[in-house]
Length: 340
Image (tube, rainbow, N blue to C red; front, side, top):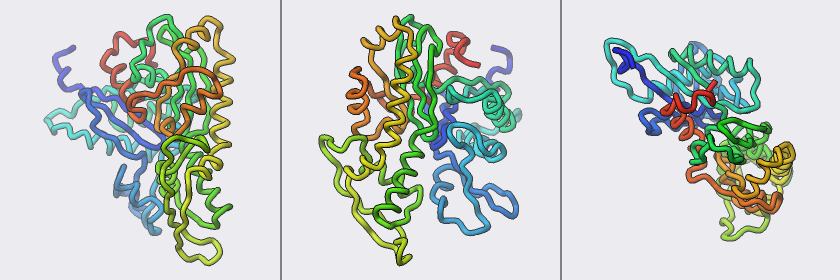
């Protein structure tokens, strides 16, 4: 701690495909969709986060909405930099004579390449960070769930986000083996959109598909306490006139089946690659679920049926990764070997 340590602001960022969460002073200060709206002519940023999300799919030709992240990695470098910069401003750090130097820990998918890692670091540095460290999402999720990752015990964590599903076996503060697949929440939304087109001749947008997934999405065709049918509004593909149809959770379960099967297969492959001693630990400790995608109705039961292992849901699955990133930032010295 130097003389000017008070000028250093430490922030933890869960830079997600669907949502970006920022933790500052142990509190979640920003929880916004990962999207920005830009004016085409001038390149001026009109909105970031929730406000930009409200514009998504409703813009005219002079405004474009950009999701800078695709499949957990930065697809649009400049838009990502703008987004990080604007979201850091939302923290509401008091203006002072000297701008604070930012120390950041950002979590990244475990399956990304060095070039993609570099892009995350560069974006953060362009947005004003002096010191950037990276931590893998499954490791951050495990810390956020409350697992003691430094113990010589095997734990399996499945983090289903918007762009990627991360499956990792963790022991002794490291990832022993991992499987990262680019099938997650966004793919489920695409499945719903396609299903609506093919079976109901109705065109719906991304936001409507997301809404259907939350309201009546299910991983199983038989669940306890089924949700009520949901009214969907979209454009009739035959007449072009807006119309309403009702959908139930059973048909959504059938349309999501293919993507969920891919996640199941990846879990089984990760278990196959696990060393026998750790496999014995996982039999006792079970599998931990985190990430927004894990909140899909019946997913825990479906995974339990497939693996015959106990399935534990994180307390706040959406923020488990961000919480873990915040804890890693706070205990920088303890977790030095976890953070790149």
